[in-house]
Image (cartoon, rainbow, N blue to C red; front, side, top):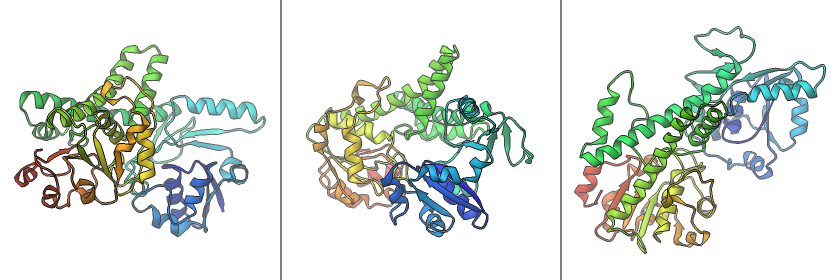
Length: 412
């Protein structure tokens, strides 16, 4: 049986290795290792450290058979056949030329051992990671040697192209989001309807409809990180104009979050001080409990900066995680003034509840910040009846029908 060792039991390593173990039960044994004792303990328990649709079933069917989670990194690295035959595969998103650095380190520290370095970037989206692993729209492998695999099934590139392709993919997606959000600002200024504009633009087959929904902005651990990675690479290679171009994608995203907070404040008579605001959703997207770089942090901190009282509900994010995210300072990269980190004392104005109706009870305004399906199916008449009037609703994710909400009585 071939032994594979995966270093890192996070959002990529855990699901990817679980699916490999599921697909190859008779020939592959997989060990996922991490130095975090608590994370490995969670992978070995009934409560996995991450939420991903379908992940529980995959892990439970393989764990203890040909899928193992361990903190004994050295043992499993030493036993892994993939290391023994000298193949090292880059999986996470990394700066371009990382493979070259890995190759040099291994070559100069392991005399007599020949290594082949491969770049196999992951293209998983949180919330659909298991589905993406079962039915990927592409597999990208970069290496010095051309593998004997049909090119219609596998994209074969050199190492640097594979690494850059992963960064470029996220940058292009983020660019589309910032583009439609920039258009939404123009639409509001001119009286146009951004939904109609994006629908018309998406009808052009060269453009398509994906990632053309105006929203509060993009969030999560990948888009901004990967764009800043591109910016750094461009600046290091003497391309300041290209670096500035990609910086603008993030600047527009920050502007959109600021605009959303400002619209809430201005709509609610130019202040939310002392007012109760219900927040539906804290994860950066539906079907995950991941809050890394979630836009909800910036929006909540903006509202707390004007001394609002927040009642937050998310079906997959714990109170401990929300309080920690709102009390911690985050990396500040040209953030607008309204989104500067707030004092930990402001978290006293935050309550976390486990029911959407409870969160909205007594709220002067309601913000939807994550596109959870359950938010589409709530009884908004019931919610409206339990809110002071006028009742405001700010849908940052295009979850609900604004016309139906207006008919109920909401100011949308």
